[in-house]
Image (cartoon, rainbow, N blue to C red; front, top):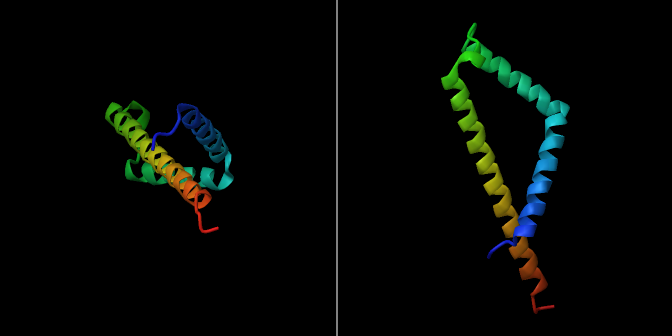
Length: 93
C-alpha cells in the first residue's frame, strides 16, 4: 500500500510539532539532565565538545534513533489505515 505524498507531508508536520512539544516537557528535560550527568560520569573532566569522534558518534546515534522512530511511526500509521479500511469494508454489518 503506497501512502500518498501529501499524507506523508501531513504526518511529518505532525511529528515535527509533537517533537517540539516533547522538547518542552519538564519530565523529559529532567531525563535529559540525568542522561548528561551519566555521560559526564563516564568521561569525567573531558570536554566532549572538543572530541570529534564523540561528536560523530553522537550524530550517528541520534540519526539512527530518529530513523527508527520515524519508521515505527509510519508503520503504525499504515497499520491504522489497514485496520480502518478493514473495519469500514466489513460486510457483516
